[in-house]
Image 1 (cartoon, helix red, strand yellow):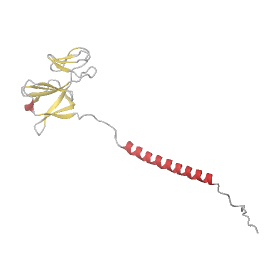
Image 2 (tube, helix red, strand yellow; image 1 turned 120 degrees about the vertical axis):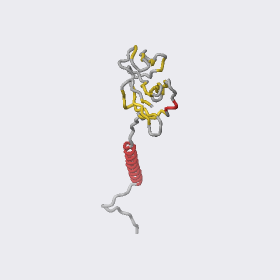
Image 3 (cartoon, one colour; image 1 turned 60 degrees about the horizontal axis):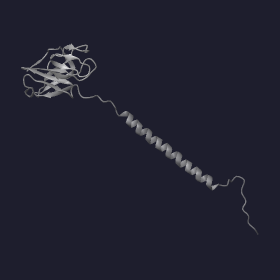
Image 4 (cartoon, helix red, strand yellow; image 1 turned 90 degrees about the vertical axis):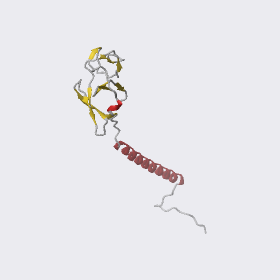
Length: 164
């Protein structure tokens, strides 16, 4: 008697190479979906963090009045301001040229723009060159701790000094 294997009509033969390929494609699909979910969550987290840079503060301290002897004209290049002390009066004048925004330097007659030749007197008034208006003056106050504060957001009338 011989036994023969017969295939039932509702059974399908499992083809081994197709099963391995399906399993591999399933793993790759799952890995891709998981990776894209992680990448999406990470990029959303990065997006929420603000990217704005506001620059240096416009209100800053420059030191105590004793650090500036009478007759001082000191340019603070990193703050783009010139501190002036005449007797017991203090002022802060912008060193940003009103023509195209170059940094002006202190000269014997006041201020001079090295880029386009604008000239300003010691009070920041235009004496020559293409600058359309004088250099702005900023408010100087004495803080409770005894230090001088310059507020570049508060422009004042030229010739206005802080009396010490």
